[in-house]
Image (cartoon, rainbow, N blue to C red; front, side):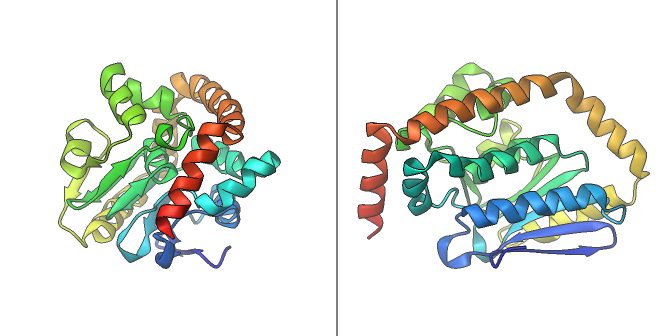
Length: 250
């Protein structure tokens, strides 16, 4: 695992913690590798019946580490670690649950589209700020989000990149259930335990039936987004947006 990604397995539930609290769980390349390994290992581990992802410290994830993205723009082959995680995420066969507090930004938001259950506190806020950074949507969000909310709403969310509060996320189907602030992990674990108690093969087959029809389209969207995203990292617009973002943070 990684210093900032930890896991434990209890009663059939694999719990993956994002634990880079001082950076609001911004995801580095090492963290992507750790997440990929955790999902691959869980698929081979019969003890794991369901996976729960949770961000410690009051935020789910602030998305990609922008400092690393500046480096990736110079060495695009480093994108492979990100793509490996997204492929593992989209192809994951066991139930996947997220408990969301605070901000879920960028990949922290798009990964929720691949979860089977999302439990969020009322203070949760989702944001897809790719266009603002001179980039394009990723994780097959350009395919999955319009299917969920329609083209116009997906355009608003993905292109304008404004925050989607918890109530709106619930209303448009991005979140299954809302809970009070600080309760997301407890509620997510409650649902994880419920799923883990069900017949394992029946759950896995049901998930496959639900996702099978669109799986090829998801993989095609993932690859197409990845190619364009990689090119955009080298664009003048992205370079300007990254520079502005980093100078503002300083």
